[in-house]
Length: 564
Image 1 (cartoon, rainbow, N blue to C red):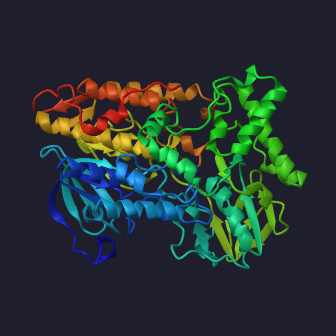
Image 2: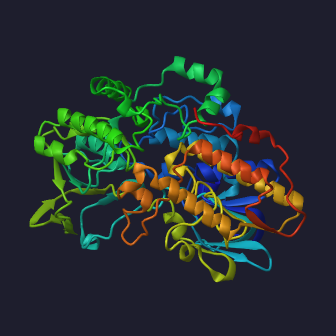
């Protein structure tokens, strides 16, 4: 029987590990693999009953990655790279989950993970210099180090609408989809939200449903995915030089490859610019943001791209009123750019309608549907495509207590404060994988995860060699980094609208731009400089000084590079 199939396992109490890891997604799995490789004992806790993280939960119809499959994958194992083959240009959720399970099997990772287990508290013992971690299953273990790999998009946001408890209609959330699936055949369906998960799921739901009513507060820009079956010639070319392919990707701002034009949109005459946009539109995917170098820096350039996309919406959607409602007026790319397959075309179907709730919000759930203004809608199923409490939501649900009884949630009440997105002052020996203040959601998550895990592993080894007890960032360095993250964000048009990047989708959340927008190459250079300095930005207690690092086999992959 596999570990995930054992719901009645006895709790672990008073067991000591070198490292305790929270999460069994791609970050947690790779963290375990690295720790095992350097001889450190570890225990991971995962609330799901198997690996996969976000891709375990996001099983909604049409769920798919928006980064090409050949790039959205681990790079640490050459054999893994060569042996695994993707079936499509953009992998679907079932295939990504299959990949995660394959990795767990291949490297025997499940034996160090306790599934169906939620971490409830983690407290730093200042005398013992250890973290005590407790779970909802009665586990109580300690670790010298604590690593959070809870993911950036893992805490589902289900708004507390009035009347939800009395609603007799099935309510589904795209981030917590039933594992048995859901049959929409012949049903009247309401969908709340028009973000990424809605844009992917609505066309699929509409194929089977009797009717679909979409409730939209704010429209989002979407570009066509142009997904295709995997081109095997392309796959062979990539696999023939995968290390070089990965290295080149790491020189790009988002750490994945796409065709990038260094010119300003304003350098190109209008007719030629339109043809250029058309070329990128035919290619599809997130690479559209690379059509010109200043789309997120110059308002006039951005306006030209925004109007091009709005023109595409008007050309596809037959009803002018619906087309106008679906056309965003804000900055193109300010919110996360969505990729779609048939989204706008779906609104031409006679059984699909759009309701604008920006002026007249959803008033309440009823026993049989939704009330909006003075109208009532009856449904057989309601889908909440309302996203996540991004970046910090999962950490907020754990009581993490550092020095002097300070909780992480209390420290971050005005917005998350980290040094390099990896550590937070007052919380010794605590690390976050793709935490706020790092590129994370603005980059290809796979190299972002691998770089963080490798940096953390390297740091732990240097601590071991020096015999040091604790490491935590100096407050001044943390303040400088938070300031730098904010300064860089202010230079980008991405900071000009209400998006989940700043927590605007959660009432009461502080409005702070959470990821680092300065790009993967600049971030990589900064992390390398910190390690090469012997962690000069940190306070290290006990043991000998941490000397300049010895080179470990994998760190050559993270040589600082300049974007080209």
